[in-house]
Length: 159
Image 1 (cartoon, rainbow, N blue to C red):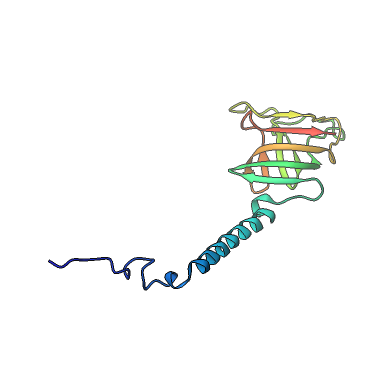
Image 2 (image 1 turned 120 degrees about the vertical axis):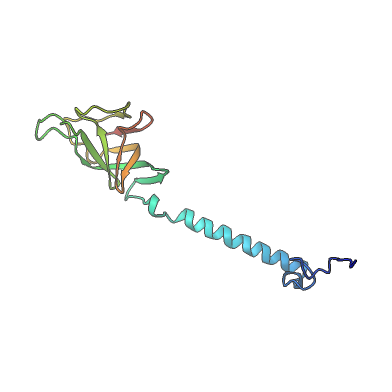
């Protein structure tokens, strides 16, 4: 019976391995350079905002994760403003626009299947465009969201 031994040629770090041709110091330098390249690439993606984390101008920031969006910024359009028309908010409710996202904040007369999120600081008698707001909402489309689907969502408007 023939005895089989480990000649080193069949192992990844054996005598014929290209990795083995480097000295220990060079292997260490190559390993550190590889790790540094990976870290630099990760930091580059972290600092540069990706498609799901586009920022708005001014104080605004947008973070999108797992079908939810966090918005911090100024209201650019107030769809809940009743000062001009004096008509009540209809069956579809109303929304505000923050950082390019239309966010449904008031359900109107429609019956909701669950408990909606909360809105604080909303004054329907004035146009609140330009007011700062913080929103945590569920995404409903590419640039639309709602706080009406669960109590954990909110819109906090500060003058």
